Image (cartoon, rainbow, N blue to C red):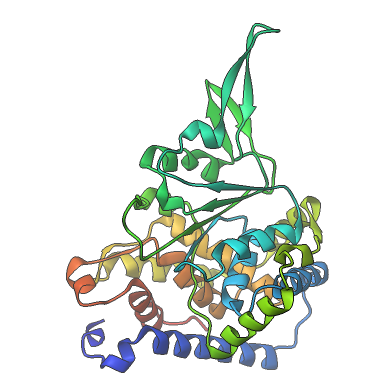
Length: 357
């Protein structure tokens, strides 16, 4: 890891690093697809067709952002939650709404504000005069896909109300447990640049998210396409173009298929080696927990299924590592002052850990 200090400015440029990393990853995947001739033991035809339908629907409105869309779909297949981070106006909220509308499931949006209370999310017991009994009135959290807009705008007590429901898919009110209807997926957004009036998510809360998805600005061609599409809308509502396709039953079936994806013992050790390296890395103040290991396992299986394979490859694990780990590890204060990011360190760890053959 010492050579990180000696990298020049170009090597430390996040855009250059990300481009090189993605090119290497796509090259590895292409080689696998070209060199392997296999027959799946699990029929993934319906899953792949469903993914194509979702991407086509979202593509009617969203320009580019392929990586974000892939991660959102992977989070659903892996039955995990996602934290979407980006500056205002890069389609965080609209992407989540489009994804929900492309699925034939219940959708709920919660706008987090400083005065939001836990009962505003979970629900509350209300006294019924006719029956002389308390009745529980469900909050907006009772849905299949929940969009939490600006999650870091609510105080800690409101954020903490999500702990149980995100991990266990249930809530406990007045000693009574209420199960969530499956699938249950939370998509949360936050703004990385605005600090006033926000409450930073604690590590325990961040750990509940399978992925942290960073959204970048579009390039020149994408920006032009966005402007042209907006001009063509002529005031029409963007989401009206979207058709719902996948049902709850189909999503549950796809999630079960992903669980059946095979991962060999040497690749399990590969995941463990990456996680162990985060705990001993001198540039990291906090390493990843066993929950991160499980998250990489689930995410790599989802990426394998999305690639049409019923087995995990090292490239699937590499693809999962950054979005799974970047919000779970903390850079030491000294390195953070130097501008070193968690992404850079995770990439260095992936490069340092020997790939199993």
